[in-house]
Length: 609
Image (cartoon, rainbow, N blue to C red; front, side):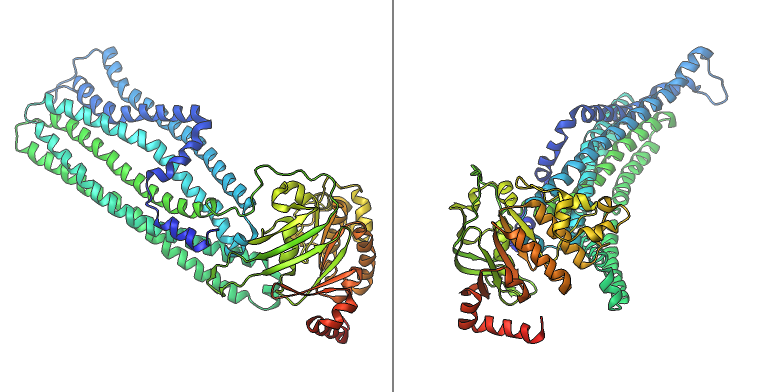
């Protein structure tokens, strides 16, 4: 399993190039028809711009305007109208082809953006919890929104302008060569094209610098989004502890860092255009200087100079593509840190189907560490679980007890494969959990966490999210069983009441009772209760204990107990400390032989907890 730092170092060490983006061009395949249409419109635009305009000036204007000053055109009105209409005709073709090119390419680009975002989002659903412990929520949000948008812009520009601008360039060069060779003494103009290779050097150098600055800008954007996300997640704490000024300073600091990084990108992104314009203007100046030393008439020079200018213009545009390309590579590097992250929780290639679950659990030589990586804040991470050997019989209610950080929640979470063992195995009815379908396994486990999460949906929808093949009760029945019916009835819309983001319209006790209702509704044969009564008063706690007693009947239950009043449900107590099992037995047995348990139990009894 790769460490996070190693993934980032590998991404940084990769030589970025066009090959890096090629797989993403494959996303255009389902939209080949509008994409080909966009490219054809780009070709028409390029020909109309590069070849059509100089040719019109060279061939049409001399027929419209007399060769001598003061004389009138000898053309008939009908023929004159025909020639004059060439001018708006060329721009009509150029305008329509440019419009449809831009519209169709944007249609394809937005589709590509949608696919990239969906790919990133789907990848995030498959990553283990450890990945989210190492990465800030706001930074991940920035990658899904800002970085995918930057990549979309690059795919649009590169797909569009790699056809449009070279065609314009070739058209202008063709017109320039034809006109230069037709006019005596104008062949020297072709030498002015030698400035084009000179433009390559600033394009490459600025592009290299720009990629580094763009990577820094995207990281700063992620940092600013992380500060904002954290702030919006804790409005109550911020006001309760008078942290408004502190938060303002944090956001101001992150915003200034992002501003500085963005201005560096703007500086280098806009530096290339004037450099190329100066170089190409020098080439045009040389052509004008040389033409002035010959007897060539102005009418003959103007079309050639226009063609020369139009041959330089695509070079400037292609330089802009290079800038966007480098910024896209910086974003792609950050996206691939997610896309290439190790999916340690993988579905078995040939999953075993769970039929009738008895619920017998065996933990065999189980050890687990959160990748054992170097953490920037805490240093070397010690193993969360060490050499666990346990058997939990079918229908047994087991309490996991111990101080914070003992590994209780980590061990219980492994039943749903929120993490997989680094060593050893967990067997359910004799089957290794890793050989079972993830969907079947997670259907078989009902989890009530200490800090439940409810979605911004109705009460009914939040409860029904717990539906499994084992569900046998109605929403109203489980609400009654979890003692949620009373406060639900007080809502204006009862079961159709929306709960707000993360259930922010509920009290802590109401949140936990709805989480219990979801577990009742799930009715799975394996039950994990992570101190499900911690936010309840003593009266409601007693009611919930009665309901939990009913809920746990016939189910293999792991009860994570922080408050020892909860262990009344348990027939067996397992004491954990520093990731190891230090005692196992009934309350009387463990109390008599385990000093840690005795101290924890007596301390709570003395405090009246």
